Amino acid sequence: MTAINRRQFLTWGLVGTTAALSTRCAQNLTFGSPLTIFSSTDTLPTHQRSQSGLLELALQARQQQVPLGNQTATLLTYNGQVPGPTLEAKTGDTVRINFENQLAQTSNLHFHGLHIPPTGNADNVFLAVPPGATQRYEFVVPEQHPGGLFWYHPHHHGVVAEQVFGGLAGPLVIRGQVDEIPEVQAAEEAILVLQDFDLNRRGQPREPMPMFRRWGRQGNLMTVNGALIPTLTIPQSGLLRVRLLNASPSRIYRLRLDNHPWHLMGLDGGTLDEPVEIEEDLILAPGERADILVPGTREPNRYSLLSLPYDRGITDMMRGMGGRHHRRASIDNAPREIARLQYGETTTAVPLPKLLIPTTSLPEPTRRREFVLDHGIDHGHSFLINGRGFDHNRVDTPVQLGTVEDWRIINKAGMDHPFHVHTNAFQVLNRNGQPFPFQVWKDVVNVKAYESVDLRIVFTDFPGKTVYHCHILDHEDQGMMGILEIQPASV
Ligand code: C2O
Ligand code: CU
Ligand code: CU
Image 1 (cartoon, rainbow, N blue to C red):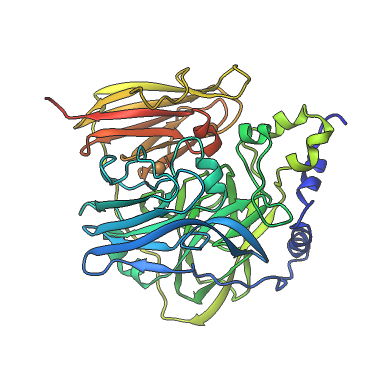
Image 2 (cartoon, rainbow, N blue to C red):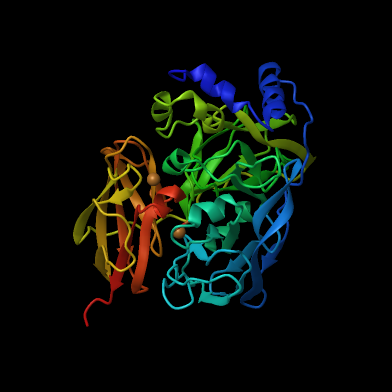
């Protein structure tokens, strides 16, 4: 067999356990008649909130059988759940997590997007928790921390993709100033954790082929809160706040709410100045979050949240491949309904908020740097930043506390690389010279193939070593990560 054309590519996507579902979904799209397929719960398994300023819990990572979509899967879980329990704290609260590793591999915890110390037993990804060991994590959420959706996941270099693809990820909500806005307070809220899986017949995650590790592992089973096509209810004439998290190791989602308006109010850990209607699709790279307001102003029908094809630069690479790989190499990019919106009872009308929490402008930088993302030539299997693969003994980027820097991220490769920085959020300035439309705190920015992105970052507090990396977790595991050392201003 020779080249793979697009039709075949889409067809292969229908192979496997989800074939029936995709077909029905396609009919659904064509004829516009909503079918009741699976109706799952839209609430996450458990939700643990802080009390009197303290969120304390035991979190155990263990392999376990869990219901996933319409089957039973053997996954890696936090407290027996996929996704893990929703954790919720307020600004100023203390978070104390007694982590126990019951996996067969070393693991640890990372609090993605939180502005907390990267040292000690706070957000320290250099801690390694061997099988059978426990580790207490503890930190205070700063008073000035933005309210937003963050998440926790393992971060032990070399096995991150495997563990996240096994199911390990959970949402972490910080309640802050934005949650005090009356219209936001009056909104119903749904957190949607997007995860994809590639399971064998026994419901176990498949070991990816080498080329899949190169592209970033991706699966045809697309779940939302561990379910297939869960239904969300929007109050008629009210507001629904939908908080999306892409917790998949590699998949980039292109999302559309079919036939229904939706408004963006925030990205990653920040809010926009005001809600902005999403006119095109919403692209969500691994690690990214979107905070959305859906006004219940349409006809009380059902509406589909669709996942549409997105090419992150791997279709070209697939073209040259031999036939024996086709079946397992199929990356399902067919349009898919992943969740559904239905109308509930009428409530008092809630308008969209006029003003959110504006993001402060950063002063001019004291320093500029470049980060070149590329693929190595040794066996073609290493992923590099500025020509180097990750080395945990090397500081790549020393910065000074109290400074502002401009970073240019240059992608010299033919594949997208979502760039993520720990500890400090940044503001995206422009993409290929085009200004970024929003002033907002982000912690992941997708740098498309051959593109370059400028961002501005500030190091106000928390000295110590931390990391930046590509959030296609296979790329991170294969070296696309560097160490940032935030040094005290003057010693
Ligand atoms: Cu969500 Cu360093 O990662
Ligand atoms: Cu992170
Ligand atoms: Cu990458």
